[in-house]
Amino acid sequence: MTTHIPTKTHMIYTVAIIGFIFTLHIVIPMYSNSSYLSLFADARTVGFIYMAGAAVSILGFLFAPGIIRRAGNYTFTLWLILVQMFLFYGLISFTDSTIIAIIFVLQMAVVSLIGLAMDIFLEGYTASDHVGAVRGLYTATLNASWVVGPLIGSMLIDGDNFKNTYVAALAMLFPLLYLVFKNFPKFADPNYIHLSPWQLMKHVSHNRSWIWLFIANFILQVFYAWMVVYSPIYLNQVMDFSWGNIGIILTVMLIAFPLTQYPLGKLADRKYGEKEIMAIGFGVMGIATVALAFITSTSVLVWAIALFMTRIGAAAAEIMMETYFFKTVSPRDSAALGLFRVTRPMAYFFAPLITGLALVFTTSSYVFIAVGVVALVAVIPSLLIKDTN
Image (cartoon, rainbow, N blue to C red):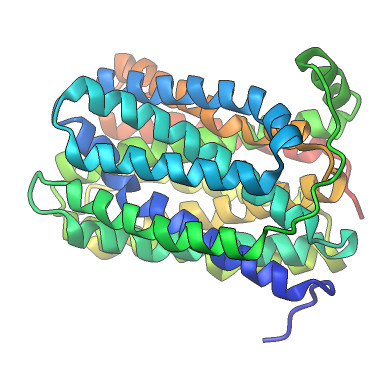
């Protein structure tokens, strides 16, 4: 396969491989996290735990640019990985529900910050005229871990014992630490722009397309947050699928990302505008999600195909947002990058609210309609973005 990537090709691939391992350590326990927490907390409390994790993540994003500016992205990343190791060891070792909840909140924040650091590494090695291809390759590589991760995780679950998933996740952190330590000691940090929160908001507000992009990205992250937290519980407790079958469904579903994102990223570089593909993606995602409410079949194939269609749309929207943003942001602008990524933890505030409000008026299956309608709303800000081509 021929790729059109800039002269620092080996570093692009290195970051992609490291990103794959990093993402795999997240994904292996990802879809069973909510079920694990539900062993000692009701659905509302699980929602609050995710919201607390989101709040700590947001605080982390506020402080991260200053820390990165002083310590450098390399040192910052190494320390985060070490902290994550201790947190996962805690999830494996402790049994007290309060301690587990606190550790879970902290590891959510650390994951978000490592993701920010990986973005900075990749941006530092990416030429401006190859952003779509590089981001498509990187995002597709990361999402390949989302294909195999749920299958691995489901195989490690033994009844109501989820701890083996955290053992596997911890094991992934050792090669991650080694690869970061080996490959980035000479990473040249750019002269990061220093902005106060107020200055950052003014800086972002001057770019009208960024505002629409952030809104669209926030809606996408709400969709992901809801699906990650609640869809496995729905498949297991409402549709009565075994964890083995859920692993198969999620694996098929997530093939959509590596299948579509690299070619779409190349298209965005060469020919088509990002906003049109983004809007179509949100349209497909929204309609397919609404359709989930009307599926009564207990067939693994039916649910796998249905959820696959939701992710085809999501994959298209995601890679177009990634491509657009990284075409228009400087590697020095870690604060704006952090603000773009803060939409992810913010989404965990709103995903539980969608469920809570929707369940007041309807049954659990029809919550998919509410989530799908929210996704369709994102078509509007997508079309208001000014194309880079």
